[in-house]
Amino acid sequence: MTSGGLTNIAAHLPEMARRQPDTPAIYIPTGRGQQYRQYSFKQLDQECDRIANALESIGISRGIRTALMVTPSLEFFALTFALFKVGAVPIMIDPGIGVKNLKVCLSEAQPEAFIGIPKAHVARLLFGWGKPTLKILLTVGSKLFWGGFSLSSLKRKFPAGKSFSVVDTDAADTAAILFTSGSTGVPKGVVYTHGNFIAQVEQLRQVYNIRPGEIDLPTFPLFALFAPALGMSSVLPLMDFTRPGSVDPKNIIGPILKFNITTMFGSPALINRVGRYGQENGVKLPTLKRVISAGAPVPASVLKRFTKMLNDDVQVFTPYGATESLPVCSIGSYEILSETASATDRGMGVCIGRPVANINLEIIGISDEPIDWWDDSLKLPAGEIGEIAVSGPQVTRRYFNRKESTNLAKILDPVNATFYHRMGDLGYRDEQGRIWFCGRKAHRVTCQEQTLFTIPCEAIFNTHGKVFRSALVGVGAPGRMEPAICIELEQDVSKEEHARILQELKLIGKKHELTRSIKHILFHPAFPVDIRHNAKIFREKLAVWAKGKLR
Image 1 (cartoon, helix red, strand yellow):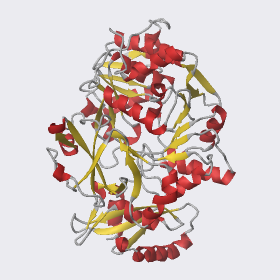
Image 2 (cartoon, helix red, strand yellow; image 1 turned 135 degrees about the vertical axis):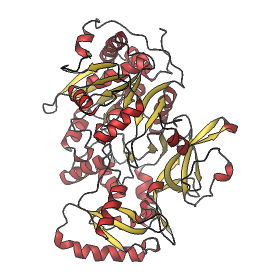
Image 3 (tube, helix red, strand yellow; image 1 turned 90 degrees about the vertical axis):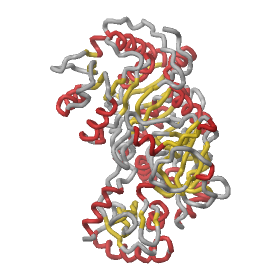
Image 4 (spheres, helix red, strand yellow; image 1 turned 120 degrees about the vertical axis):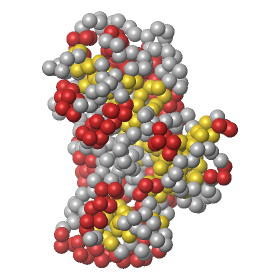
């Protein structure tokens, strides 16, 4: 094996171990108060080398698709980097997507190896995950009756100091298969190349001016994998990563203050919860240099509340993107709160900022059909709502074993030797070159006389002080849908207030031409949301619920 260059995303770790061997790479909570175990870049790299040698000894090597189902821990990070080092292809799936979806995803991904904690192996046996293709089993923890290998036993065969040379990979080589959250259907496996990962890292560095030596609090574990490439230390918070909206705020605020955290990533649901606690308790977070929140639009009220905990010169940034391409655009809380939020409240959509430097973004006409070839005639003028399409080095080329989905999402551009990814999101470009998000294409409500878009309509109803969030859905067949707005109220609202709030919401709807046709307002106790960020609303489920209510 040759020494891998920086075309292998894992090569950043040994490079950081060489540059700053004793700098902490990661802090793992012990589960006892605010106590953490610390691992330096040198220690993490050595652990990865040891595991890489162990993986290769049992046949997990270059190109081997490997399902990884391990909870966030030292083993999770060491295994992920070790898989990259040997050139294997880790398959990442959110466990909260449900047993049925998990089986479909693993069937499509066709893993040859399965690395999991005991609970994952039990579920694999019970539900037949990956049964037709799996050849290698590896258990992290106590191996019981299912055979295969134990990670702890394997590691004992290799001394702690035994090095491993990162496999040389090309930028176009497959690095991983990351599954989407499935907010608009069954999750799809996005094929990431090493080039995609490296482009992501470089954009995150440039857009947010992240410098080596900073300290990161990643509340979405996969984001912690970028830290070594950015020269950052990571502090893993004590939380249930499948329920960020239910986090104990003290478990976020505590480590920020304890470790002088400079960068924090959090879903809108987590930012909202921590911000409310911070407001009620007068919390200040003076060490943060930036906060990044993604996964769904972040309401201006949530941004305003959270920024009160930060220094005056610190922003909450809300990058726009998707599993298939991230980042695409970015905007900060300064611009949102001082300028664009008022337009959002009037039904203009949510401003997601300007495209990042290496992304070519176009707005094309709305269509549910495949578009085979790129043509400039597809582009719409500024101010007209269409589908967002992007091209650039961090844009992924295909879904794994999903040819039809790939054909629907990708537009080939042979003239420029590239392709465009259709984001499945609707929006428009304003005269200043900023992009405004208007909702998912699959969620648009097509009525007989007009088409309504979710985000602009919902924002109008969200201006009511007692509305936590709203969701526009359509009842009936496409083209003849009847629009309804589902409302989730703030938790402190009593049942006795519902009648008054309903009348106030009706008045709000009538005041705006955009929402005048929405006659049905339905209160819902708690919206169904995605497992990854607890923020993307499952409008398809709400549409079924609304249909039952309107019968």
